[in-house]
Amino acid sequence: MYPLKFEDILRPMIWGGEEISRFKQLPEVHVGVGESWEIAQVGDKVSVVSEGVDKGKTITDLIVRDGAKLLGNHVAARYGAQFPLLIKFIDARDNLSIQVHPNDQLAMARHNSFGKTEMWYVINAKPGAGLYSGFSKQITPEEYVERIQNNTITDVLQFHQVKSGDVFFLPAGRIHAICKGIFIAEIQQSSDITYRIYDYDRRDAQGKARELHVEQSIDAVDFNLYDNLRTDYVPSLNEAVNLVECPYFETNLIEVDQSVKRPISVRDSFVIYICMGGKVRLTDENGYAITLHQGQTALIPAEIATVTIDAELPAKLLECYIPA
Image (cartoon, rainbow, N blue to C red; front, side):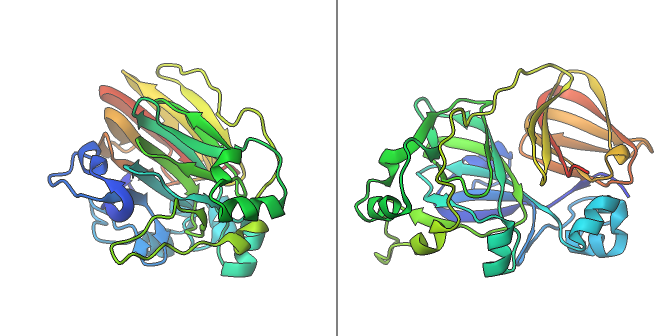
């Protein structure tokens, strides 16, 4: 096995723009694209290998063929033939809906799906841009429904102005929304279950409002108050800085301007590298190398012992894997 790259899965959205095409340095600018699914196995959105001897094979094909060699023993035992993460870039030209995601138990009972715990890394943000995460005051489920009906739900949400490098961890149940002017990398459980709570009364070209899931969402929402919902960390050049640890994924930030060697097989998990700026060369212990530039993502199979990250340009990467 070897370090893998995948074809882009570009997804048009009502709130999408043009930044994904530019950020990923695509030959053509695609208008209205809100998300690029970098590594996915959700419904009919399944990633396809773009390079090497396995070019054209899907991630499902690889899991069926290679199993724990690709995923890691504990990951394969836990998830079987299901790839456990969904990796995205998101370009918010306009506000995304206010939403919440169910946890594993609720999602399995209602949708036969994983829940959706996720994290955001802000790559770029326009001055004054921000996002919603969590409540700003204690409310009851009854007040929650009333405020959605009278268009005041945002009055009781925490709004966070953001800048490049900000990180937010969003466990299932936390009410949230990305607002216009933000470009992020998102790491999440492999699920597309979203309860849309409020959509600013937007209408499509036919004048129809998008479906809301207010009643469904009540059992999913965490109504507790939390103080600091932004993740604090101290960047460190050419070292891995931990950003998030949870049962579903662990994520590090790696900023490099030289050569850095990273362990893979000892984690007993595949490792994903998301390039958010610059350009690197990833080389495994067998000498197989791939180039990763801004906007590209790679999956390192679990059986690979180590990977060396060589900065061809100073670069910023997210490193993600499934904790044992």
